[in-house]
Amino acid sequence: MATLVAVCVGSVKQEPKEPREEGILDRGWGLLGDAHAGMGRRSVSLLRREDVAKREEEVGFALPPGCLAENLVIDGLPEILPEGTLLRFPSGVVLQVTERGKRPEEPHSYSYRGECLLPTVGYFLTVLEGGTVRPGDEVAWAFPR
Image 1 (tube, rainbow, N blue to C red):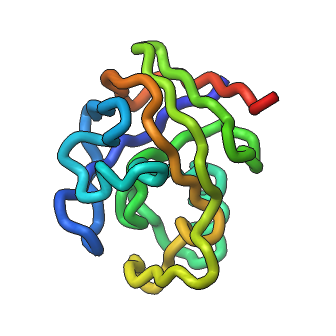
Image 2: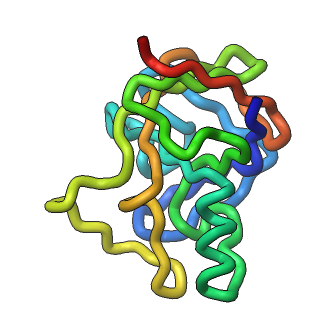
């Protein structure tokens, strides 16, 4: 079982996102109030806490939740989440992994102190079932069959 560490929202693209006490995920839309909601298969972004911690060690400074433009930070997920993997939250929220990283031809213009992880180790998801998520929520996953 994994744990949701942070839920972050940003109303302006190419700006850092701010951690929130909770987030409302709307089916087929994304995280309410976030500039990337409504982006179809890529409406929610995710970083594994392990990847953030590894990068912090490499660069020697903290990467606070939201600074890398991610919506969710989750601790305890497998290193690789194949496309189609489902993430389930206690509230009934179900997210589906739609893509890992960004396509090589797709620009990524946002960084925090020169750092960006979404293009290489981040995940993009779509909301299959909506509801509220909060830091501390347990997250179960199921790989596609």
